[in-house]
Amino acid sequence: MKRPLFLLMLAGLLAPAALAKGPSEATVTGPGIGKTISFTGSGEASGTALGNLTEYTGFFPAAFGQSPNPMLGGRPAERLGPKFTIHYVVPGGNGATFRLTQDLYPYARGGAVTYLKPGQAIFDSRSLGGWYRGGDVLKQTLVRAGLPATVPRDGGGTDWTPLPTWLAAVAGALLLLAVSAFALRRARVAAPA
Image 1 (cartoon, rainbow, N blue to C red):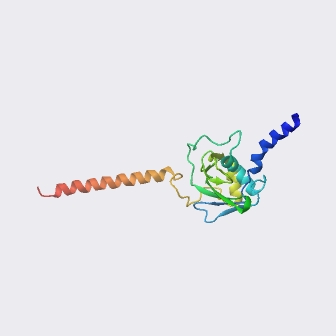
Image 2: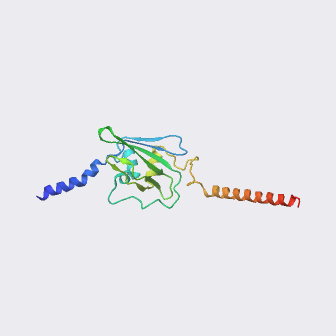
């Protein structure tokens, strides 16, 4: 009597995992790389390029949930760097295809970070979403696939802009304000009374 109950409980635990099919392809795009980085194969096969990508980006816990939950409690506080995008293609039953998008910050201080927006359709459910730290292993996986090891020169976005650039912008604005004030004062002095 105990064995059938155990098998029934085991089937109940494994059924959601069996339904959690992974991506068949993924593409990475972003500022300054000038190309699309592609991954194909089985997103469920650990040790393959696509399998490693899905593992290190936290695709499965972000899409389906996992216990214990490895997702971060919220957006990391440190600078994330330029935002890249991962587009996943997940085959479904009866010819259905699901497309999920995940934000990728490979140059984040403290290690690469991803964010999957909650509520994206996948099978008969919606993604749970959230932030995940893939760390250096995620960045190195991306570098092996063609991502530059350092922030591309045309990195885009303001999140990664170095502090001296911000200081230069503030200094320029202050200089413009000072010149305008000087010109207004000079115009008032030169005006006939």
